[in-house]
Image 1 (cartoon, rainbow, N blue to C red):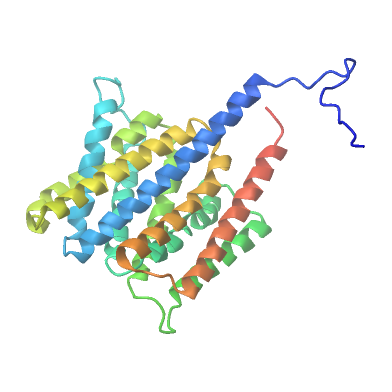
Image 2 (image 1 turned 120 degrees about the vertical axis):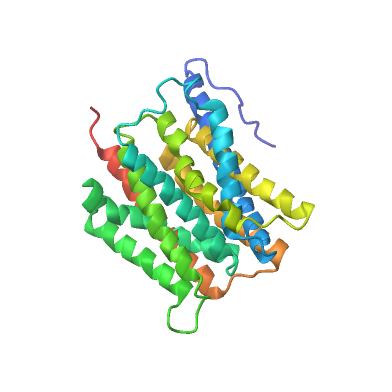
Length: 317
C-alpha cells in the first residue's frame, strides 16, 4: 500500500511569505548580469571587427578614429551643454584630458596588437589590468593592499608571463603592445576613480572621447586610406556600433546590479573571444594562453572576493 504524502501545511503552521521587494531585486540582478554578458559580447565583436580590418590593411589608427568619432557623436546626443547645463565645467580639466588621451591610447594599442595576435591572447593579457589597478591604488590613491592581495597580484602577473613567454620563443612581439595597454588602461581607471570626487559622471562621459578625437582630427589627412569595399565600411560601422552598444549595456547593467555581482561576468568576454576567433579566423588558443588566462582570471576573482568580504565586514555608517 502506498503512502500518500500531504501536500498542504497544517493550519497552525504559517507558510513563509514571499518578499516582493527581494523578488524584484533578484530579477533586477539577473537582468543586470544578462546585460553585462551582452556588453562584453559586443566588446568581443568590436575586437573581431578591428582585427578583420587590420588584416585587410586598414590602418588601426583609422579604425580608432572611427571608433571615437561615433562615440563622441552618440554621447553628444544625450550629454551636451543644452540638455545638461554646466556639463562642460570640470574642476580637474587636466585630469579629464589625460583620461581621454589614455583611453584613446589604450584603444589604439589594442587595435595595433590585434593585427598580429589572436582575440583570446589580447583579452587574456588585458585581464591583468584590474591587478595593475589594485597594485597602483596604494601609492596613487592610498588604497593599500594586504599581503594576501599582493601575492594574488603577483600570481596574476605570472599568468601574463605564461601567456607571453618572453625570451623562450613565445608569442609575437606585438604582445608587448598588450602589456603596454594594461599599464595605460590601469592609469585610465585610476584617474577615473580620482575624478569621481570632483566631477559628475555626465561631465566625465562628455570628455571621454573628446581629447583623443581632437588629437586624431589634424592627423587624419595623413593616415586616412579610404576603405576598399563596402565590407570594410560595414566593419568600421560595426566597430562604432558595437563599442557604443557595449558601453550602453554596461551602464544599464550597473544601474540594476552591484559592481561586485557583475564583475565576475566580465570574464565571459574570454569565451566570446575564443569563439569568434575560431569561427572567423580559425584561431585555436595555445595551451600556454589557456593556462595563463586561467591564472590571471583566478587571481582577479580572488581579489574580487576579498574586496567583497572587506566591504561586507565594513561597519555601516
